[in-house]
Length: 286
Picture 1 (spheres, rainbow, N blue to C red):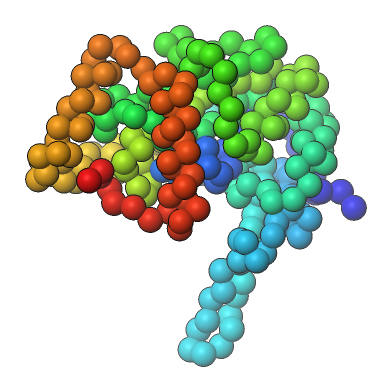
Picture 2 (picture 1 turned 60 degrees about the vertical axis):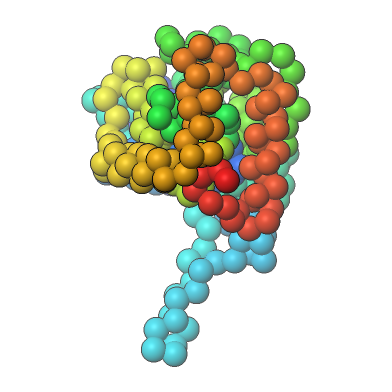
């Protein structure tokens, strides 16, 4: 049985595929939030079979109970949707990260992007890092083959990193091996912030807009960013040790000293430990 269903008609011209999954490289839900902004007015062109890809005990479908009656189950929905922005065709590939059959999934996606005549692959992600909420969100990039990152974004960090893999990275590698220009933009978010981080989603959309040469919709992200910044500023001001910590991070950024590879791995490992413990944690460090 195929892993996906292709929904006709399909008439996109040289679309760019923008991809985000709710995996560990979606810290602060920044990547999926950014890509979800593209789906307004879009239509589904491909849908993956959830029974083949997801572990329903690890990712239990939400159940709605109304007045004591079992009313509705919501199954995981992994889709590719076609949107057109300023005459540019975009494919938004967004949803939960599959649990099963990653290698088969990679082969299937490589076949599908060829079938959909995709011109370029862009992974979108977010990772925890030692950066302050008071400065612009840093973006680092990955690029394979003939892919070119937009100006102002560098590949990085330097050196070798060994981190837990994510399906989105596996797919980026697989489609690049098939000859498709493939790149990724990854926001670095303050490791001490738990919950959604709209500032990173907003920055990712800005980078994508520059890369694609179109103005992408941002919805309510600017206002959500402003409100969260106010809450974080108040929380930092109320605690001297927190304020000192944020100031130290600010000085690192102002001196243009980005976290080294081993520092970045330490923040990622801490983030994953917190996720394994249920993702609990305060908004700011103690």
